[in-house]
Image 1: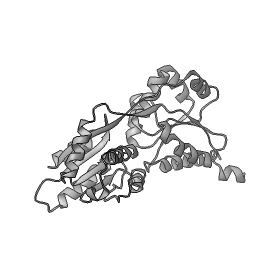
Image 2: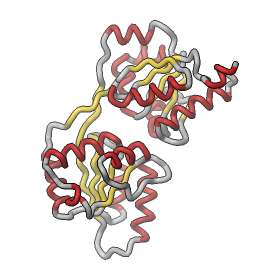
Image 3: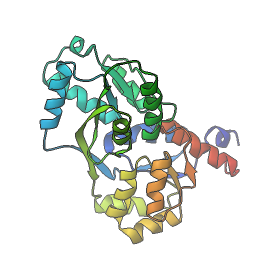
Image 4: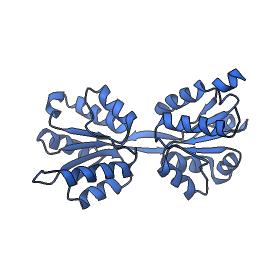
Length: 273
């Protein structure tokens, strides 16, 4: 009983669908609570073919053409500083910039590169960023439009850019990378279906779409019919709904830690530990 209380996910098999370079952090935290994790990287991150917009944005940064650079993912931060380093740009040349991030993990990645975040919303979503910048723009005494660079994935949601423009800001968008489905090998599929999966975790709408695209609707629903679906937040929950899937668990704090804590809380609430 003591071990079950300390390891509430003992005996639970949890599917982790994040990209390979991101899966380990989630799997490790789940395993700390006793879970058996199955890492199936259903998406992979690829560079975009056209780098022109990235180069033009960096040029504009060097002429102090932006007030804010906004990151909505860890990988956005990484690709930005890869570009900065590739051009041998000194950190001091970015001193006039303010950086905003969507959540703590993205902020931690920014700090690894030696920069301090100036703003992070209370809600770790694009809607949270909108609310934060709405307040900021309304309180601003600046006599010219505020200038934003949104450095993010191809296909990212448009709500932030659209709302900032409606509020009078000047907004440039750079698509620095894209997420694409990552086909599974026959061995990986066999590993997935050989034993029941108790929880399926989704950390972005792209993982939901890839789950159905790669496994096929029939096999995907077969797995989900016998599992509890855990979504990292409301946007991912909505993606699940679009495929007719109910997310029994939706993290209130939209981070990896928040998702793990939500799963543990759900298990404890059901008296299954």
